[in-house]
Length: 219
Image (tube, rainbow, N blue to C red; front, side, top):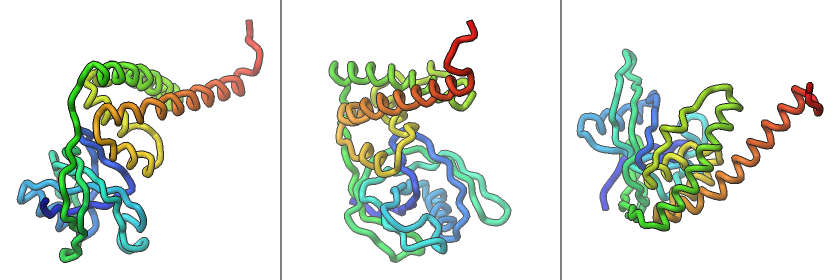
């Protein structure tokens, strides 16, 4: 157990995945400045209630499971604001909240994740990757961009966390994914979600094509 500075956000961070943040509130300038000076991580926690920006809503109440973030790049701007890039590292659970500092802190424990890759996990990962490839291709068509599916990881751990991060579902749904205790469990939770989202996206694109081209072929 140790004390960790917390950054409540309307997002869920997963291990191995990057996050880019613009730091403008005074309390978070102080927090991130200390993390940079001390070369310490901070915790990203999704909001259960409240708002990210203090003056725009009620007090931020975070979910109890979050992910540590290690700062890899930072840029200090002339007026004290900062741009940072951080990478998710370890999942944690908040045991107690601490309000002594201007920013939120938590007494946390690191949650172990079974990273073992056995035959069952590898097979499940291979099945998931095929759905992720299809999803990316459809997403590229929908947004008129070309997405390089060759860059989708083959490693089950990297694939699982990347797939959870990029999937366009609600924050509460992503929070459920973050709570998975093993990589196999995470992959098994992702599989039906990718089937559903891919099917819906395919249907949407087919409907749009019929609307634009008409119900009959020009041939």
